Amino acid sequence: MFKATDFTPFEKKVWLASPTMHGEELKYMTEAYETNWMSTVGENINEVEKIAAETSGVSYAIALSSCTAALHLCVKLAGEKLYGKSQIGHGAVEGKRVFCSDMTFDATLNPVVYEGGIPVFIDTDPASWNMDPESLEKAFAMYPEVKLVVCAELYGFSGNIRKIKEICEQHGALLIEDAAEAMGASWEGKQCGAFGDYAAISYNGNKIITGSSGGCLLTNSLEDANKARKWSTQARENAAWYQHEEVGYNYRMSNVIAGVIRGQYKYLEEHIAQKKAVYERYKEGFKDLPIQMNPIVEGCVPNYWLSAFTIDPEYMCRQVRGECEALYISEAGKTCPTEILEVLNSLNAEGRPIWKPMHMQPMYRNHAFITVDGSGRCRTNAYIPGGCVDVGADIFNRGLCLPSDNKMTDEQIDLIIEVVKGCFE
Image 1 (cartoon, rainbow, N blue to C red):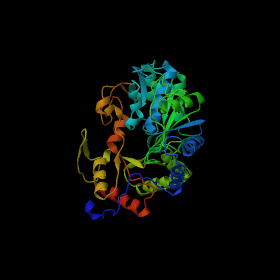
Image 2: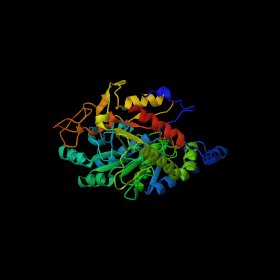
Image 3: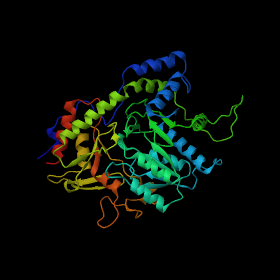
Image 4: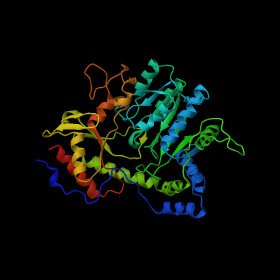
């Protein structure tokens, strides 16, 4: 019988995804220090904006303090373009419904709420784990007045973002692309982050490249780029004194952090190749198990940021999750995400559950949730015979993210594979 104690814990923590530094970053940080450009202006910021735009295949990139800040300004730009300039004390999409990815991190849609919008959650495509185009079509049929969509690309594995964009255009809606997890990934040869009317990428500490924090807003509009840059520096007017005519934010990127990002960019493809090797070793190691790795649909070239899988339903042991705790009952030949994650943690390795869908979160349970059959709200963790299909909840119930650090050794990956195999014994 399988016992976690049969395995020797890793001497050093095996992380889900940790920063990988190369030394080039220190050169640019030191340059900022020695030239005394330690604030939110400087050559590093200028270069990051140039490189980010070129890498993403867009005209302009605005370097900001976080991807969340970038998403916030994306919503503000879209809202003012759609509904006119917001009044002080009111957001740009105040009282308006906004279609949002359901299975994602809450940072994707928090900016919608900052601006007074009402998120409507679009279920997940089981083929890609991303926003389901069919459910989006159903949503427009139910709420034809909606003019804004916020779509996230999960774990660096894109869905048909081109189709999502086409649906938005058919309904006169703008698309915000949350490419925080998908920098370097592409769809049909076009970079993720280049499909949206506005997009955001992330340099958070666990991303494919990092500055410890930071993000960029991406756009092809010079006018919008200038607006975002102005808003991010407290919306100062062009006057000798501090003149303000609208609300602004302290969102600009630090020139020191930009130095780290500037030094990281040249290693983006190397990091993707390393992440791909981790994914493929897992996939080969698990080929005889009743699990399915992150799906790669035709047209997608992933960045392989996080390797994840779902357990086939008939091999799931009994598991129940509350708001903050989970319980399971061990069963021979079966396992569940809670059991596997507990075992990995006991061996000093970090895994994570799949993103819990937004419509299941306490703060959003009364919001509309559009499923593949357009039937409306559905809160089950599995398929309902003869009823609606809650794909995101099902993936959350059966899925988990594996340790995916690009510095993992083959031996470490192989041990994790054996541990997961043991959970099915």
